[in-house]
Image (cartoon, rainbow, N blue to C red; front, side, top):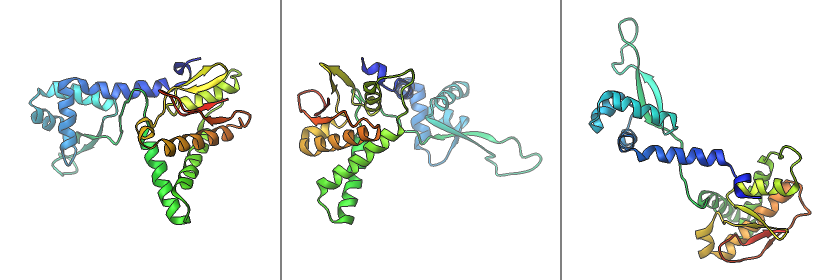
Length: 233
């Protein structure tokens, strides 16, 4: 069994494609120009802004739209309406899509969400912060478990668990009947705050297992170099 089998390949390809679209210099220049403008801009404005021919700018702008990096809207720049006002102009603006690729996968945004929620809970309920972190991580794990669809084709219990973990970047591997997680999505944080992050991982994964109704599989702390501190038996 491998990460490729369980991982979200479509999402990975989409993210890489979005980043690679900016490798082309003209396309990158257009994206940066559009992103820097306070309002949506026309093809002519973008072409002039980066000193490109209009037809070249049009091609690259539309490619950026295809990749989800730019959005379009149509508006009459003159402000006139009615007969004789002319056709609306196609305008470009930066999209709200966020693109980030890290190899191996890291999810520091998720760690930030868990820790922020924990701080709010600790202040509201007057409980220790570590306890609040464990609660927030468990809530997150239950949500991930609930979102995971059952595997098709009579998939095994291990496939269900591994698919849920792979979707969060843990890179599961089977070694001697133990499910080892080859990657910690919170690696840099774990190096500096090992006890806190390992506890967060343990409660997240345990809650995910419960939500998937795999209570016969146990997540345990089993730290080792170059992998997640949690293993599943």
